[in-house]
Image (cartoon, rainbow, N blue to C red; front, side, top):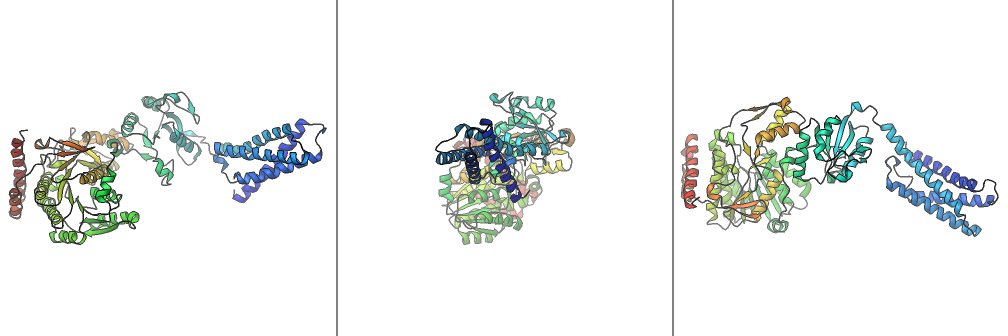
Length: 609
Protein backbone atom coordinates (compact mmCIF):
# COMPACT_ATOMS: atom_id res chain seq x y z
CA UNK A 1 0.00 0.00 0.00
CA UNK A 2 1.49 3.37 -1.03
CA UNK A 3 1.78 6.32 1.35
CA UNK A 4 -1.06 8.46 -0.07
CA UNK A 5 -3.57 5.61 -0.03
CA UNK A 6 -2.52 4.67 3.49
CA UNK A 7 -2.84 8.30 4.66
CA UNK A 8 -6.33 8.64 3.17
CA UNK A 9 -7.57 5.46 4.83
CA UNK A 10 -6.17 6.44 8.24
CA UNK A 11 -7.68 9.95 8.06
CA UNK A 12 -11.06 8.55 7.03
CA UNK A 13 -10.93 5.98 9.85
CA UNK A 14 -9.97 8.66 12.40
CA UNK A 15 -12.76 10.96 11.21
CA UNK A 16 -15.33 8.23 11.77
CA UNK A 17 -13.87 7.46 15.21
CA UNK A 18 -13.84 11.13 16.31
CA UNK A 19 -17.41 11.83 15.26
CA UNK A 20 -18.60 8.46 16.50
CA UNK A 21 -17.06 9.00 19.96
CA UNK A 22 -18.76 12.41 20.34
CA UNK A 23 -22.20 11.17 19.31
CA UNK A 24 -21.83 7.95 21.31
CA UNK A 25 -20.95 9.87 24.48
CA UNK A 26 -23.93 12.20 23.91
CA UNK A 27 -26.39 9.37 23.46
CA UNK A 28 -25.00 7.39 26.41
CA UNK A 29 -25.68 10.32 28.77
CA UNK A 30 -28.79 11.80 27.12
CA UNK A 31 -30.72 9.20 25.19
CA UNK A 32 -33.88 11.35 25.16
CA UNK A 33 -32.32 14.62 23.91
CA UNK A 34 -33.31 16.55 27.05
CA UNK A 35 -30.21 18.74 27.64
CA UNK A 36 -28.02 19.07 24.56
CA UNK A 37 -29.13 21.15 21.64
CA UNK A 38 -28.10 20.46 18.08
CA UNK A 39 -25.80 23.50 18.27
CA UNK A 40 -23.88 22.07 21.25
CA UNK A 41 -23.39 18.74 19.53
CA UNK A 42 -22.28 20.38 16.30
CA UNK A 43 -19.72 22.69 17.94
CA UNK A 44 -18.27 19.83 20.00
CA UNK A 45 -18.02 17.51 16.97
CA UNK A 46 -16.35 20.08 14.70
CA UNK A 47 -13.94 21.20 17.47
CA UNK A 48 -12.83 17.67 18.29
CA UNK A 49 -12.60 16.76 14.58
CA UNK A 50 -10.32 19.68 13.68
CA UNK A 51 -8.24 19.44 16.88
CA UNK A 52 -7.64 15.73 16.40
CA UNK A 53 -6.39 16.02 12.82
CA UNK A 54 -4.13 18.98 13.61
CA UNK A 55 -2.58 17.18 16.59
CA UNK A 56 -2.37 13.89 14.71
CA UNK A 57 -0.12 15.64 12.20
CA UNK A 58 1.92 17.34 14.93
CA UNK A 59 2.56 13.98 16.65
CA UNK A 60 3.08 12.16 13.31
CA UNK A 61 0.33 9.62 13.91
CA UNK A 62 -0.13 9.21 10.16
CA UNK A 63 3.59 8.58 9.53
CA UNK A 64 4.22 5.79 12.01
CA UNK A 65 4.65 2.18 10.94
CA UNK A 66 1.93 0.76 13.17
CA UNK A 67 2.81 -2.85 12.42
CA UNK A 68 5.91 -2.25 14.60
CA UNK A 69 4.04 -0.18 17.23
CA UNK A 70 5.25 -0.10 20.84
CA UNK A 71 4.84 2.02 23.98
CA UNK A 72 6.20 5.11 22.21
CA UNK A 73 3.39 5.06 19.66
CA UNK A 74 0.78 4.55 22.40
CA UNK A 75 2.13 7.60 24.25
CA UNK A 76 1.81 9.67 21.06
CA UNK A 77 -1.87 8.62 20.77
CA UNK A 78 -2.50 9.51 24.42
CA UNK A 79 -1.01 13.00 24.03
CA UNK A 80 -2.86 13.70 20.79
CA UNK A 81 -6.28 12.57 22.06
CA UNK A 82 -5.93 14.27 25.47
CA UNK A 83 -4.90 17.61 24.00
CA UNK A 84 -7.72 17.47 21.44
CA UNK A 85 -10.27 16.92 24.27
CA UNK A 86 -8.78 19.84 26.24
CA UNK A 87 -9.05 22.11 23.19
CA UNK A 88 -12.67 21.03 22.68
CA UNK A 89 -13.42 21.78 26.35
CA UNK A 90 -11.99 25.30 25.98
CA UNK A 91 -14.08 25.89 22.87
CA UNK A 92 -17.19 24.71 24.73
CA UNK A 93 -16.38 27.16 27.50
CA UNK A 94 -16.03 29.99 24.98
CA UNK A 95 -19.28 29.24 23.18
CA UNK A 96 -21.52 28.11 26.01
CA UNK A 97 -19.77 29.38 29.20
CA UNK A 98 -19.80 25.80 30.40
CA UNK A 99 -17.81 22.56 29.97
CA UNK A 100 -19.65 19.26 29.64
CA UNK A 101 -17.11 17.18 31.58
CA UNK A 102 -18.93 13.86 31.65
CA UNK A 103 -19.59 13.92 27.94
CA UNK A 104 -15.96 14.83 27.16
CA UNK A 105 -14.63 12.17 29.54
CA UNK A 106 -16.64 9.43 27.82
CA UNK A 107 -15.57 10.80 24.43
CA UNK A 108 -11.92 10.75 25.62
CA UNK A 109 -12.17 7.11 26.75
CA UNK A 110 -13.83 6.01 23.52
CA UNK A 111 -11.37 8.06 21.50
CA UNK A 112 -8.35 6.43 23.19
CA UNK A 113 -9.74 2.92 22.88
CA UNK A 114 -10.82 3.20 19.26
CA UNK A 115 -7.77 5.10 17.96
CA UNK A 116 -5.37 2.85 19.87
CA UNK A 117 -7.27 -0.29 18.91
CA UNK A 118 -7.38 0.66 15.25
CA UNK A 119 -3.61 1.08 15.24
CA UNK A 120 -2.69 -2.03 17.20
CA UNK A 121 -4.88 -4.19 15.02
CA UNK A 122 -2.06 -3.73 12.47
CA UNK A 123 0.32 -5.51 14.86
CA UNK A 124 -2.15 -8.34 15.42
CA UNK A 125 -2.82 -8.77 11.70
CA UNK A 126 0.86 -8.63 10.82
CA UNK A 127 1.80 -11.23 13.41
CA UNK A 128 -1.10 -13.43 12.34
CA UNK A 129 -0.14 -13.11 8.66
CA UNK A 130 3.53 -13.85 9.18
CA UNK A 131 3.14 -16.38 11.96
CA UNK A 132 5.20 -19.47 11.38
CA UNK A 133 2.44 -22.01 11.22
CA UNK A 134 4.37 -25.17 10.46
CA UNK A 135 7.26 -24.97 12.92
CA UNK A 136 8.60 -28.31 11.73
CA UNK A 137 10.17 -26.44 8.82
CA UNK A 138 12.11 -24.19 11.18
CA UNK A 139 15.06 -24.68 13.50
CA UNK A 140 14.02 -24.66 17.13
CA UNK A 141 16.15 -22.00 18.78
CA UNK A 142 17.33 -21.41 22.35
CA UNK A 143 18.32 -17.81 23.15
CA UNK A 144 20.97 -17.34 25.83
CA UNK A 145 20.36 -13.97 27.44
CA UNK A 146 16.88 -12.66 28.29
CA UNK A 147 17.91 -9.00 28.45
CA UNK A 148 17.18 -6.26 25.94
CA UNK A 149 19.38 -7.89 23.27
CA UNK A 150 17.80 -11.31 23.72
CA UNK A 151 14.24 -9.97 23.58
CA UNK A 152 15.16 -7.99 20.47
CA UNK A 153 16.39 -11.21 18.87
CA UNK A 154 13.21 -13.07 19.91
CA UNK A 155 10.99 -10.34 18.46
CA UNK A 156 12.90 -10.36 15.18
CA UNK A 157 12.74 -14.15 14.85
CA UNK A 158 9.02 -14.20 15.63
CA UNK A 159 8.09 -11.50 13.14
CA UNK A 160 10.62 -12.06 10.35
CA UNK A 161 8.95 -14.55 8.03
CA UNK A 162 12.20 -14.99 6.06
CA UNK A 163 14.08 -16.31 9.08
CA UNK A 164 14.28 -20.07 9.40
CA UNK A 165 14.74 -19.91 13.18
CA UNK A 166 11.89 -20.36 15.64
CA UNK A 167 12.53 -19.15 19.21
CA UNK A 168 11.48 -21.65 21.86
CA UNK A 169 12.93 -20.50 25.19
CA UNK A 170 15.46 -18.30 27.00
CA UNK A 171 18.35 -19.12 29.31
CA UNK A 172 19.60 -16.38 31.63
CA UNK A 173 21.70 -16.33 34.82
CA UNK A 174 19.47 -13.67 36.37
CA UNK A 175 17.47 -15.70 38.91
CA UNK A 176 14.79 -12.99 39.04
CA UNK A 177 13.78 -13.96 35.50
CA UNK A 178 13.66 -17.71 36.06
CA UNK A 179 10.23 -19.36 35.60
CA UNK A 180 8.89 -16.16 34.01
CA UNK A 181 7.84 -15.66 30.37
CA UNK A 182 9.26 -12.99 28.07
CA UNK A 183 7.73 -12.48 24.62
CA UNK A 184 5.68 -15.61 25.39
CA UNK A 185 8.88 -17.67 25.84
CA UNK A 186 9.84 -19.30 29.17
CA UNK A 187 13.10 -18.41 30.94
CA UNK A 188 14.29 -21.91 31.86
CA UNK A 189 17.16 -21.08 34.19
CA UNK A 190 20.90 -20.33 34.10
CA UNK A 191 23.63 -21.71 31.86
CA UNK A 192 23.69 -24.93 33.87
CA UNK A 193 20.37 -25.97 32.24
CA UNK A 194 21.57 -25.53 28.64
CA UNK A 195 22.24 -29.22 27.99
CA UNK A 196 18.95 -30.30 29.58
CA UNK A 197 17.02 -27.60 27.68
CA UNK A 198 18.47 -28.71 24.34
CA UNK A 199 17.34 -32.29 24.96
CA UNK A 200 13.92 -31.46 26.40
CA UNK A 201 12.93 -28.88 23.75
CA UNK A 202 14.68 -30.56 20.77
CA UNK A 203 16.80 -27.47 20.17
CA UNK A 204 18.59 -27.27 16.82
CA UNK A 205 20.13 -23.82 17.23
CA UNK A 206 21.59 -21.73 20.08
CA UNK A 207 22.05 -17.97 19.91
CA UNK A 208 24.24 -16.21 22.47
CA UNK A 209 22.63 -12.78 22.86
CA UNK A 210 24.67 -11.07 25.60
CA UNK A 211 26.74 -8.23 24.05
CA UNK A 212 28.50 -7.42 27.35
CA UNK A 213 29.76 -10.97 27.81
CA UNK A 214 33.35 -11.24 29.04
CA UNK A 215 35.66 -13.77 27.44
CA UNK A 216 35.76 -16.10 30.47
CA UNK A 217 31.95 -16.06 30.60
CA UNK A 218 31.77 -16.82 26.88
CA UNK A 219 34.10 -19.79 27.39
CA UNK A 220 31.87 -21.15 30.16
CA UNK A 221 28.72 -20.78 28.07
CA UNK A 222 30.32 -22.22 24.96
CA UNK A 223 31.65 -25.21 26.89
CA UNK A 224 28.06 -25.99 27.90
CA UNK A 225 26.81 -25.50 24.33
CA UNK A 226 29.62 -27.66 22.95
CA UNK A 227 28.28 -30.62 24.95
CA UNK A 228 25.15 -30.54 22.79
CA UNK A 229 24.63 -31.16 19.08
CA UNK A 230 22.99 -27.75 18.53
CA UNK A 231 24.78 -25.23 16.33
CA UNK A 232 25.93 -22.25 18.37
CA UNK A 233 26.17 -18.68 17.09
CA UNK A 234 26.23 -15.23 18.66
CA UNK A 235 24.47 -11.99 17.83
CA UNK A 236 26.47 -9.25 16.09
CA UNK A 237 27.99 -6.39 18.06
CA UNK A 238 25.55 -3.66 19.06
CA UNK A 239 27.77 -0.99 17.50
CA UNK A 240 27.70 -2.84 14.15
CA UNK A 241 23.90 -2.96 14.32
CA UNK A 242 23.72 0.73 15.21
CA UNK A 243 26.06 1.66 12.34
CA UNK A 244 23.95 -0.38 9.91
CA UNK A 245 26.77 -2.80 9.07
CA UNK A 246 24.62 -5.80 9.91
CA UNK A 247 21.04 -6.53 10.86
CA UNK A 248 19.93 -7.95 14.19
CA UNK A 249 19.34 -11.42 12.79
CA UNK A 250 22.69 -11.73 11.00
CA UNK A 251 24.25 -14.08 13.51
CA UNK A 252 27.96 -14.90 13.48
CA UNK A 253 29.79 -18.05 14.35
CA UNK A 254 31.65 -18.16 17.63
CA UNK A 255 35.28 -18.10 16.53
CA UNK A 256 38.16 -19.89 18.14
CA UNK A 257 39.74 -16.45 18.57
CA UNK A 258 36.80 -15.52 20.80
CA UNK A 259 37.54 -18.47 23.08
CA UNK A 260 41.31 -18.08 23.19
CA UNK A 261 41.32 -14.32 23.39
CA UNK A 262 41.64 -12.43 26.66
CA UNK A 263 40.26 -9.26 28.18
CA UNK A 264 41.88 -6.31 26.36
CA UNK A 265 44.59 -4.44 28.25
CA UNK A 266 44.32 -0.66 28.55
CA UNK A 267 47.18 0.96 26.64
CA UNK A 268 49.02 4.10 27.65
CA UNK A 269 47.35 6.17 24.94
CA UNK A 270 48.98 9.45 25.99
CA UNK A 271 52.43 7.86 26.02
CA UNK A 272 51.92 6.23 22.62
CA UNK A 273 50.47 9.43 21.14
CA UNK A 274 53.48 11.40 22.40
CA UNK A 275 55.84 8.81 20.89
CA UNK A 276 54.05 8.26 17.56
CA UNK A 277 51.87 11.34 16.98
CA UNK A 278 53.21 13.57 14.19
CA UNK A 279 56.18 11.21 13.72
CA UNK A 280 57.43 9.27 10.70
CA UNK A 281 56.97 5.52 11.16
CA UNK A 282 58.40 2.75 8.98
CA UNK A 283 57.06 -0.80 9.15
CA UNK A 284 58.89 -3.62 7.39
CA UNK A 285 56.83 -6.61 6.37
CA UNK A 286 53.87 -4.22 6.28
CA UNK A 287 51.84 -6.55 4.08
CA UNK A 288 52.03 -9.50 6.46
CA UNK A 289 49.55 -10.51 9.14
CA UNK A 290 51.41 -8.84 12.01
CA UNK A 291 52.92 -6.00 9.99
CA UNK A 292 49.61 -4.91 8.47
CA UNK A 293 47.88 -4.92 11.88
CA UNK A 294 50.73 -2.87 13.36
CA UNK A 295 50.11 -0.36 10.57
CA UNK A 296 46.39 -0.22 11.37
CA UNK A 297 47.05 0.32 15.07
CA UNK A 298 49.75 2.95 14.45
CA UNK A 299 47.46 5.01 12.23
CA UNK A 300 45.05 5.43 15.16
CA UNK A 301 47.72 7.58 16.84
CA UNK A 302 48.06 10.09 13.97
CA UNK A 303 51.65 9.80 12.71
CA UNK A 304 52.60 12.39 10.11
CA UNK A 305 53.79 9.65 7.73
CA UNK A 306 53.78 5.88 7.64
CA UNK A 307 56.04 3.98 5.22
CA UNK A 308 54.71 0.54 4.28
CA UNK A 309 57.77 -1.47 3.31
CA UNK A 310 57.40 -4.95 1.92
CA UNK A 311 58.65 -7.33 -0.75
CA UNK A 312 55.28 -8.54 -2.04
CA UNK A 313 53.52 -5.95 -4.19
CA UNK A 314 50.03 -7.43 -3.79
CA UNK A 315 50.09 -7.43 0.00
CA UNK A 316 51.52 -3.90 0.15
CA UNK A 317 48.90 -2.71 -2.34
CA UNK A 318 46.14 -4.23 -0.18
CA UNK A 319 47.19 -2.56 3.09
CA UNK A 320 48.01 0.69 1.26
CA UNK A 321 44.49 0.92 -0.23
CA UNK A 322 42.87 -0.05 3.07
CA UNK A 323 44.66 2.69 5.01
CA UNK A 324 44.10 5.30 2.32
CA UNK A 325 40.34 4.82 2.47
CA UNK A 326 40.40 5.83 6.14
CA UNK A 327 43.44 8.05 6.70
CA UNK A 328 44.49 9.54 3.36
CA UNK A 329 43.51 13.10 4.35
CA UNK A 330 45.20 12.85 7.77
CA UNK A 331 48.36 10.78 7.22
CA UNK A 332 50.89 10.61 4.41
CA UNK A 333 50.93 6.95 3.39
CA UNK A 334 53.92 5.74 1.36
CA UNK A 335 54.10 2.20 -0.08
CA UNK A 336 57.72 1.11 -0.51
CA UNK A 337 58.48 -2.10 -2.42
CA UNK A 338 61.80 -3.34 -1.08
CA UNK A 339 63.56 -6.53 -0.05
CA UNK A 340 65.28 -6.22 3.34
CA UNK A 341 68.13 -8.32 1.89
CA UNK A 342 68.82 -5.49 -0.58
CA UNK A 343 71.08 -3.33 1.58
CA UNK A 344 71.32 -0.43 -0.85
CA UNK A 345 67.53 -0.22 -1.26
CA UNK A 346 66.94 -0.30 2.52
CA UNK A 347 69.45 2.52 3.04
CA UNK A 348 67.81 4.46 0.22
CA UNK A 349 64.35 4.17 1.81
CA UNK A 350 65.68 5.17 5.24
CA UNK A 351 67.57 8.14 3.77
CA UNK A 352 64.50 9.33 1.83
CA UNK A 353 61.97 9.16 4.65
CA UNK A 354 64.13 9.51 7.81
CA UNK A 355 61.75 7.58 10.10
CA UNK A 356 61.58 8.26 13.82
CA UNK A 357 60.55 4.67 14.68
CA UNK A 358 61.03 1.42 12.78
CA UNK A 359 58.95 -1.69 13.45
CA UNK A 360 60.77 -4.62 11.87
CA UNK A 361 58.20 -7.35 11.19
CA UNK A 362 59.64 -8.72 7.93
CA UNK A 363 60.92 -12.28 8.36
CA UNK A 364 60.74 -15.84 7.15
CA UNK A 365 58.65 -17.51 9.88
CA UNK A 366 57.54 -20.92 8.60
CA UNK A 367 59.42 -23.49 10.72
CA UNK A 368 59.47 -26.61 8.44
CA UNK A 369 60.20 -24.57 5.29
CA UNK A 370 63.20 -22.90 6.93
CA UNK A 371 64.52 -26.32 7.96
CA UNK A 372 64.74 -27.12 4.26
CA UNK A 373 66.04 -23.67 3.34
CA UNK A 374 68.45 -22.55 6.09
CA UNK A 375 70.43 -20.30 3.74
CA UNK A 376 67.33 -18.24 2.91
CA UNK A 377 66.39 -18.07 6.60
CA UNK A 378 69.81 -16.63 7.46
CA UNK A 379 69.82 -14.21 4.53
CA UNK A 380 66.42 -12.82 5.44
CA UNK A 381 66.20 -13.06 9.22
CA UNK A 382 69.82 -12.24 10.04
CA UNK A 383 71.29 -10.25 7.16
CA UNK A 384 67.97 -8.55 6.46
CA UNK A 385 67.69 -7.51 10.10
CA UNK A 386 71.32 -6.33 10.03
CA UNK A 387 70.57 -4.14 6.99
CA UNK A 388 67.50 -2.57 8.61
CA UNK A 389 69.25 -2.06 11.96
CA UNK A 390 72.40 -0.49 10.50
CA UNK A 391 70.32 1.78 8.27
CA UNK A 392 68.36 2.82 11.36
CA UNK A 393 71.62 3.58 13.15
CA UNK A 394 73.07 5.48 10.19
CA UNK A 395 70.02 7.73 9.75
CA UNK A 396 69.52 8.30 13.49
CA UNK A 397 66.22 6.51 13.96
CA UNK A 398 65.03 7.01 17.53
CA UNK A 399 63.82 3.43 18.16
CA UNK A 400 63.86 0.17 16.25
CA UNK A 401 61.58 -2.65 17.43
CA UNK A 402 62.38 -6.17 16.22
CA UNK A 403 59.38 -8.53 16.13
CA UNK A 404 60.86 -11.76 17.48
CA UNK A 405 59.38 -15.13 18.42
CA UNK A 406 59.06 -17.56 21.30
CA UNK A 407 60.90 -19.98 19.00
CA UNK A 408 64.05 -17.94 19.65
CA UNK A 409 64.15 -19.46 23.17
CA UNK A 410 66.29 -22.63 23.34
CA UNK A 411 65.75 -22.97 19.58
CA UNK A 412 65.49 -26.39 18.04
CA UNK A 413 64.84 -25.09 14.53
CA UNK A 414 66.52 -22.81 12.04
CA UNK A 415 63.81 -20.17 12.18
CA UNK A 416 64.12 -19.83 15.94
CA UNK A 417 67.91 -19.81 15.81
CA UNK A 418 67.97 -17.01 13.22
CA UNK A 419 65.54 -14.99 15.32
CA UNK A 420 67.76 -15.49 18.39
CA UNK A 421 70.77 -14.42 16.35
CA UNK A 422 68.90 -11.31 15.19
CA UNK A 423 68.05 -10.41 18.81
CA UNK A 424 71.72 -10.62 19.82
CA UNK A 425 72.75 -8.72 16.72
CA UNK A 426 70.68 -5.63 17.54
CA UNK A 427 71.58 -5.87 21.23
CA UNK A 428 75.23 -5.50 20.28
CA UNK A 429 74.48 -2.66 17.91
CA UNK A 430 72.62 -0.85 20.72
CA UNK A 431 75.85 -0.62 22.76
CA UNK A 432 77.41 1.99 20.47
CA UNK A 433 74.37 3.55 18.82
CA UNK A 434 72.10 6.47 19.67
CA UNK A 435 69.20 4.39 18.33
CA UNK A 436 67.35 2.31 20.93
CA UNK A 437 67.21 -1.28 19.68
CA UNK A 438 64.72 -3.63 21.35
CA UNK A 439 63.08 -6.97 20.63
CA UNK A 440 59.52 -8.08 21.35
CA UNK A 441 58.94 -11.81 21.75
CA UNK A 442 55.58 -13.55 21.54
CA UNK A 443 54.12 -16.86 20.45
CA UNK A 444 51.65 -17.86 17.77
CA UNK A 445 49.06 -15.37 16.62
CA UNK A 446 45.60 -16.60 15.72
CA UNK A 447 44.65 -16.05 12.12
CA UNK A 448 48.13 -15.29 10.82
CA UNK A 449 49.22 -16.94 7.60
CA UNK A 450 51.50 -19.36 9.42
CA UNK A 451 48.92 -20.28 12.05
CA UNK A 452 47.36 -23.74 12.25
CA UNK A 453 43.88 -22.20 12.19
CA UNK A 454 43.70 -21.58 8.40
CA UNK A 455 45.04 -25.11 7.80
CA UNK A 456 42.47 -26.67 10.13
CA UNK A 457 39.64 -24.67 8.54
CA UNK A 458 40.68 -25.82 5.06
CA UNK A 459 40.81 -29.45 6.20
CA UNK A 460 37.32 -29.13 7.72
CA UNK A 461 35.96 -27.61 4.50
CA UNK A 462 37.38 -30.60 2.61
CA UNK A 463 35.57 -32.98 4.94
CA UNK A 464 38.53 -33.85 7.14
CA UNK A 465 40.41 -35.30 8.77
CA UNK A 466 42.29 -32.62 10.72
CA UNK A 467 45.96 -33.49 11.07
CA UNK A 468 47.62 -32.80 14.43
CA UNK A 469 51.31 -33.51 15.00
CA UNK A 470 51.02 -34.96 18.52
CA UNK A 471 48.24 -35.24 21.13
CA UNK A 472 50.38 -33.42 23.74
CA UNK A 473 51.64 -30.61 21.50
CA UNK A 474 51.03 -27.23 23.16
CA UNK A 475 51.41 -23.65 21.95
CA UNK A 476 50.87 -20.13 23.22
CA UNK A 477 48.28 -18.12 21.29
CA UNK A 478 47.42 -14.45 21.01
CA UNK A 479 45.14 -12.55 18.66
CA UNK A 480 46.76 -10.38 16.00
CA UNK A 481 45.27 -7.07 17.28
CA UNK A 482 46.37 -7.75 20.87
CA UNK A 483 49.89 -8.70 19.81
CA UNK A 484 50.20 -5.62 17.60
CA UNK A 485 48.95 -3.24 20.28
CA UNK A 486 51.37 -4.64 22.83
CA UNK A 487 54.24 -4.40 20.35
CA UNK A 488 53.48 -0.69 19.91
CA UNK A 489 53.23 -0.23 23.68
CA UNK A 490 56.55 -2.02 24.21
CA UNK A 491 58.21 0.30 21.69
CA UNK A 492 57.10 3.28 23.76
CA UNK A 493 58.67 1.75 26.88
CA UNK A 494 62.02 1.04 25.19
CA UNK A 495 65.28 2.22 26.72
CA UNK A 496 67.52 0.03 24.59
CA UNK A 497 68.78 -3.60 24.58
CA UNK A 498 65.57 -4.95 26.17
CA UNK A 499 63.92 -8.17 25.18
CA UNK A 500 60.25 -7.53 25.85
CA UNK A 501 58.22 -10.65 26.48
CA UNK A 502 54.45 -10.53 26.03
CA UNK A 503 52.24 -12.41 28.45
CA UNK A 504 50.74 -15.10 26.25
CA UNK A 505 48.44 -16.51 28.92
CA UNK A 506 48.15 -20.25 29.37
CA UNK A 507 49.46 -22.63 26.69
CA UNK A 508 46.79 -24.42 24.68
CA UNK A 509 46.84 -27.99 23.45
CA UNK A 510 46.67 -28.11 19.66
CA UNK A 511 44.38 -31.14 19.98
CA UNK A 512 41.88 -29.11 22.05
CA UNK A 513 42.11 -26.31 19.51
CA UNK A 514 41.26 -28.74 16.70
CA UNK A 515 38.28 -30.15 18.62
CA UNK A 516 36.89 -26.69 19.34
CA UNK A 517 37.27 -25.65 15.71
CA UNK A 518 35.38 -28.72 14.51
CA UNK A 519 32.48 -28.03 16.89
CA UNK A 520 32.45 -24.33 16.03
CA UNK A 521 32.15 -25.29 12.37
CA UNK A 522 28.96 -27.22 13.10
CA UNK A 523 30.39 -30.75 12.88
CA UNK A 524 31.09 -33.52 15.31
CA UNK A 525 34.60 -34.87 15.89
CA UNK A 526 33.43 -38.22 14.52
CA UNK A 527 32.28 -36.59 11.25
CA UNK A 528 35.60 -34.82 10.57
CA UNK A 529 38.09 -37.00 12.40
CA UNK A 530 41.54 -36.20 13.80
CA UNK A 531 44.77 -37.90 12.74
CA UNK A 532 48.24 -37.60 14.28
CA UNK A 533 51.06 -37.26 11.76
CA UNK A 534 54.12 -36.80 13.99
CA UNK A 535 56.26 -33.84 14.95
CA UNK A 536 57.70 -32.04 11.92
CA UNK A 537 61.38 -31.14 11.47
CA UNK A 538 62.47 -28.43 13.90
CA UNK A 539 59.29 -28.45 15.99
CA UNK A 540 59.21 -28.58 19.79
CA UNK A 541 56.54 -30.25 21.87
CA UNK A 542 56.03 -27.01 23.78
CA UNK A 543 57.18 -23.42 23.44
CA UNK A 544 59.02 -21.16 25.90
CA UNK A 545 59.15 -17.40 26.16
CA UNK A 546 62.33 -17.17 28.26
CA UNK A 547 65.45 -19.31 28.54
CA UNK A 548 67.19 -20.09 31.82
CA UNK A 549 69.48 -17.08 31.63
CA UNK A 550 66.51 -14.75 31.20
CA UNK A 551 64.15 -15.93 33.90
CA UNK A 552 64.74 -12.90 36.13
CA UNK A 553 62.04 -10.86 34.47
CA UNK A 554 60.09 -7.90 35.73
CA UNK A 555 56.70 -6.65 34.64
CA UNK A 556 56.78 -3.05 33.41
CA UNK A 557 53.25 -2.88 32.01
CA UNK A 558 50.20 -5.16 32.07
CA UNK A 559 51.08 -8.23 29.94
CA UNK A 560 54.58 -6.87 29.12
CA UNK A 561 57.73 -8.14 30.82
CA UNK A 562 61.44 -7.45 30.34
CA UNK A 563 63.69 -10.47 30.06
CA UNK A 564 67.32 -10.23 31.20
CA UNK A 565 69.33 -9.35 28.11
CA UNK A 566 71.79 -12.02 26.94
CA UNK A 567 74.70 -10.45 25.08
CA UNK A 568 77.28 -12.09 22.86
CA UNK A 569 80.61 -10.78 21.63
CA UNK A 570 80.16 -9.05 18.32
CA UNK A 571 83.22 -10.83 16.94
CA UNK A 572 81.47 -14.20 17.19
CA UNK A 573 78.43 -12.93 15.32
CA UNK A 574 80.64 -11.21 12.77
CA UNK A 575 82.66 -14.37 12.16
CA UNK A 576 79.52 -16.37 11.34
CA UNK A 577 78.29 -13.71 8.90
CA UNK A 578 81.68 -13.48 7.16
CA UNK A 579 81.98 -17.23 6.76
CA UNK A 580 78.34 -17.71 5.77
CA UNK A 581 78.90 -17.48 2.03
CA UNK A 582 81.35 -20.41 2.19
CA UNK A 583 79.01 -22.70 4.13
CA UNK A 584 76.65 -25.35 2.80
CA UNK A 585 73.26 -25.98 4.36
CA UNK A 586 74.64 -28.52 6.83
CA UNK A 587 77.40 -26.16 7.97
CA UNK A 588 74.94 -23.28 8.32
CA UNK A 589 72.77 -25.27 10.71
CA UNK A 590 75.73 -26.62 12.67
CA UNK A 591 77.49 -23.26 13.12
CA UNK A 592 74.26 -21.42 13.85
CA UNK A 593 73.29 -23.80 16.66
CA UNK A 594 76.85 -23.86 18.00
CA UNK A 595 76.65 -20.11 18.57
CA UNK A 596 73.24 -20.26 20.25
CA UNK A 597 74.04 -23.31 22.42
CA UNK A 598 77.44 -21.98 23.50
CA UNK A 599 75.88 -18.66 24.37
CA UNK A 600 73.34 -20.33 26.65
CA UNK A 601 76.08 -22.39 28.38
CA UNK A 602 78.27 -19.36 29.04
CA UNK A 603 75.48 -17.20 30.41
CA UNK A 604 73.86 -19.99 32.39
CA UNK A 605 77.10 -20.19 34.39
CA UNK A 606 77.42 -16.41 34.59
CA UNK A 607 73.95 -15.90 36.05
CA UNK A 608 74.36 -19.03 38.25
CA UNK A 609 70.97 -20.32 37.17
